[in-house]
Image 1 (cartoon, rainbow over the protein chains, first blue to last red):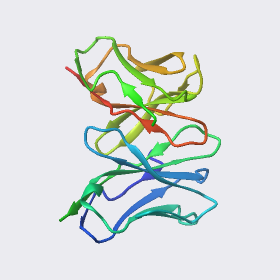
Image 2: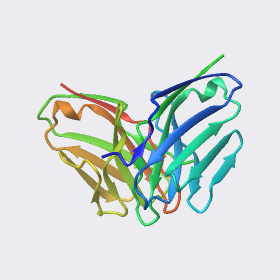
Image 3: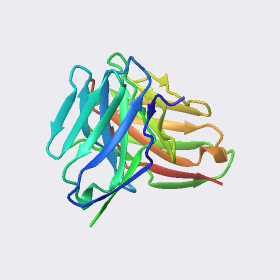
Image 4: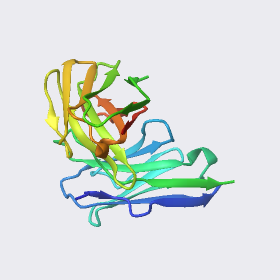
Amino acid sequence: DQQVKQNSPSLSVQEGRISILNCDYTNSMFDYFLWYKKYPAEGPTFLISISSIKDKNEDGRFTVFLNKSAKHLSLHIVPSQPGDSAVYFCAASSSNDYKLSFGAGTTVTVRA
Amino acid sequence: DVKVTQSSRYLVKRTGEKVFLECVQDMDHENMFWYRQDPGLGLRLIYFSYDVKMKEKGDIPEGYSVSREKKERFSLILESASTNQTSMYLCASKKTAQPQHFGDGTRLSIL
C-alpha cells in the first residue's frame, strides 16, 4: 500500500504562471519530506526538502508547504519555465529510517 | 559533485538468466539503494545497504539479491530473470542526514 500519494498524474501550465504539485501521505511517523525532479533518460535529482518542524521552505522559484494535520504537502514553482517540464516525485521518510517512500510522480508540462 | 554510475543504460536478457546490475559511487557514501521505477507506481525500494557487507530488504525484495563487498560498489542480482522484472532500475547513494543522489538508471528488458 502506497504511503505517499500524488493523485495528479499530470499538470499542464503556461510559462510564467504558477505550478502547484500536491502530495499526501498516510504514515504519521514521516517527518522529513523531499521533492525530486526527473528528466527522461536521467536519474531523479534532489530539488527541495522540508522537515516536520517547519511548515514552509523556499529555494528560489521553488517553495514547499507542509500541513502536518492534513498530512499534505505541496510544491509551488513560480514562475514556471520550459526547463521545469519534467516528472516530479514526492518522497518521505522518518528520521530513524534510511528508507524513502516515493509517490507515483506528476508529469509537469510548461507551455510556451 | 556526486557521481553515481550505473554500468549499463540499456540491457536485454532472457528469462531464467542470472543478471547483474552494477552501481558505483565516488563520494564515500555509507548508504546505497536499489529501486525500480514503473509507470504509475513511482520508485519502489528493492534493497539498501548502510555499510560494507550489510544489506536490508526494501519493499519488494522478492526475486532479487544484492552484494556490497566494497564501500563504493553496490550490485543488484536477479537470480533467475522473469518478464515481470522488466523495468527501469535506479541506484542511489547518500551520506547520513543528506538527500539521496541517483544514477541515470538501467532500462532492463527481460524477453
